Length: 304
Image 1 (cartoon, one colour):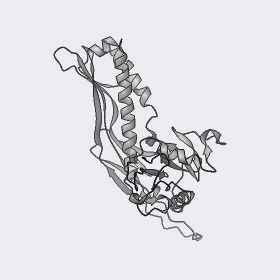
Image 2 (cartoon, helix red, strand yellow):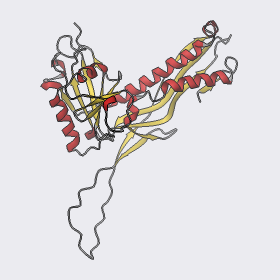
Image 3 (cartoon, rainbow, N blue to C red):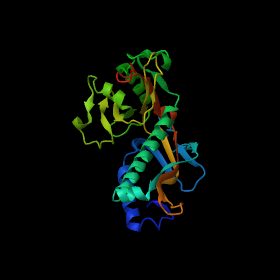
Image 4 (cartoon, rainbow, N blue to C red):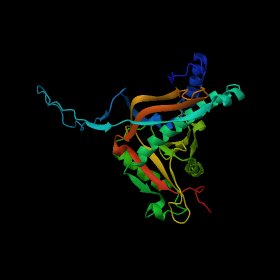
């Protein structure tokens, strides 16, 4: 239920509930990045530890009859995330509500929900973009040297897949890793020989929201949360940071679940109400070996 403060004079409970339902419908499953996080929720915590357990060494020595083994000591590495506050609000006037027959109330709840989803999605992707495992597409010398022809190539994907696979990074369902790309990059990928549209999958793998298809060992997911670096390449070429991840790449810590907030009225005549969202969260890379990024151009990202 939405967080509600001092609204009795403006809304009855049934309207608040309807707004909350509208908010939840718009937010449901819309945060693409949350499909790929190791999640730990600790309400009210100042900081939250996400624990990473390393694999055990291979047991290649035969056991000796009658002799006990030397048990191993389990080690772990903790990544500490400090949740931070995020949120925003829109002022809805009583006149707007009256003139639209209440549609402004539901419309505001819908717009606020979409903003929350897009914000959280962007925060998770920004955490991945801060990683240090980076490959420049098509052999470019630097991001500033990327030209329009420096699209993601098969050799780039072969390299990144190998980096993940040789580190024994666990794959997602469908025995593939995940590629998270901007729609501009997705448009180029879909033109490649061997790309398989998601609707053509032969096995019963549950599709991820915004999943477009698979190519070169990756399930490709489209989201506008991926940063466009305007004019970062040579000339007027935009560059893109496409993420390639396996299991345990990303963690999310939540000390207060993001939710809709309704506050007010705080003006003398009760005409203005604040409809927004608020939460305390943080995203961070957990296993750096599980996260790679390819910086490239797109055929749709040249500002000419």
